Image (cartoon, rainbow, N blue to C red; front, side, top):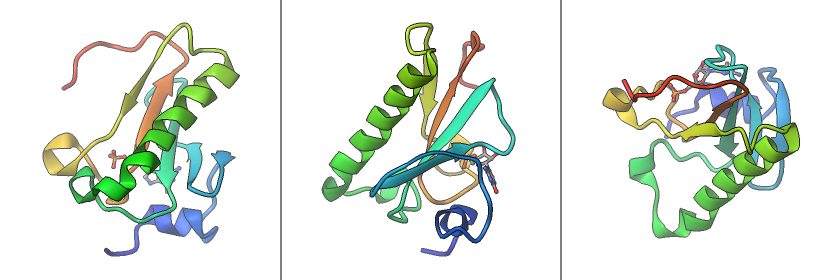
Length: 114
Ligand code: 5GP
């Protein structure tokens, strides 16, 4: 898989506004936020798209979701609600080919998917 901007952020070669990190992932604010809170949860393991996941990644994907929910709780908007999204490939709107979970919240979000 080719090096992406997220690999450079994980290695500290490009700055980002980190809000969380552990052995499996980093989380930082999206450069172009689509909501008052827009954080990307990115596994350190370079996986290009959801199509490239294998059974061995099951726990990793679960950890991304749990970390996003924990962040929403810490920041106080879990009960109000939020949205999590994985985009996959062109039709899904994916632009960075290193899987990441978008967490959007902090205000009522528009409905719909397109
Ligand atoms: P995708 O479209 O692949 O699902 O999401 C990629 C996200 O990464 C976009 O929301 C975009 O704004 C964000 N992004 C792209 N480049 C950078 C960057 O250099 N830094 C940060 N913090 N976010 C970025």
